[in-house]
Image (cartoon, rainbow, N blue to C red; front, side, top):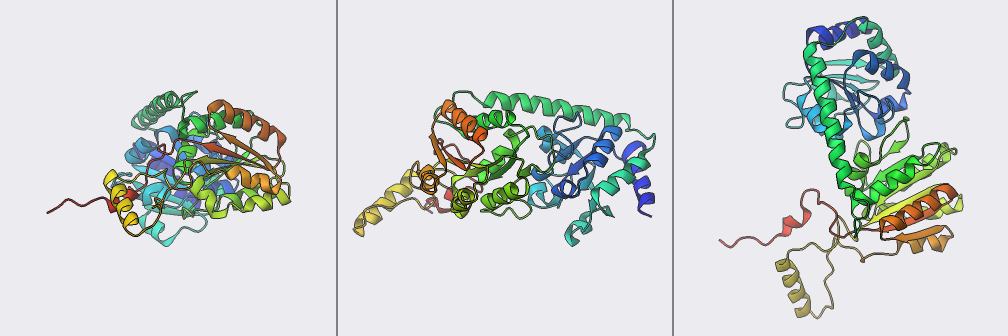
Length: 387
């Protein structure tokens, strides 16, 4: 029965129905080991694809069908999206407009699709991603994409190439003070020199968002970990420990925001105790999204109130101790530690620690104003206009 449904779907996606088809690959496909089936299906069908962060590498980033760099255009323009092993959660904007077209049809491939996702889907193929990909490949036969769909794929690939070129221009080689773009470019280049490819954990608001875009390409499955389905903060070092224990042949690099590190930073003791090959890189911008960003009016009002109450100071609740010495924490337990404030210092620390494959922490000091607030936290307490 499912093979019959697969055949009908292939007909609708190729010559009959879909003008702008898209494949989305999630971590469920990575967990199921669906590389062979999905790589063949993507190559033969010609349908453009993108992946969630933990689904990266199931089909290598270097594949010509990859449109990750044109993600917004792909989501907004798709009229049929085949979702392999991914939830329609926050990472996929809950399958809702304006990020997705209001008329998009979702085809879910999942061993256990959620009730909510199933209600949003035009069709559910309940099964293992590898098995269903093989059924779709068989059903594809000699069918091919329509001329409109081929043009759609071509347009996405051109958009992706243009976006990647724009990104590279942002990754200044000598920016000072460091920002997320330049710091992560240095980490990206250092990771590319490691063989076999390391497991990379990314965690934190700006850190994770930027790492998803900059720390590429991803050529193998199951080498990326982040906040996952629920966007949970504080899981990064636990993921790193688990990765090191289960993939002893791989270096593990945990790229952490300073706030994210604060949730479970004492796991460095575990890392040192078991001599795990984990390098922690902290993007230290001195706070949640950065340093003190209060409007001058708020700063003045807070200072006035503290003075009236005979208090010495009024630290911003979301600002941390400036340039905190997290490297000293790793040093205290006996691991290797580095503090860096320039691209050349960071590059040297990465090169040494990656090759040593011992517990290490790199405290990378970046501009306190480098981050972008999610939801404009500070605006919640902005001075109100007088009526």
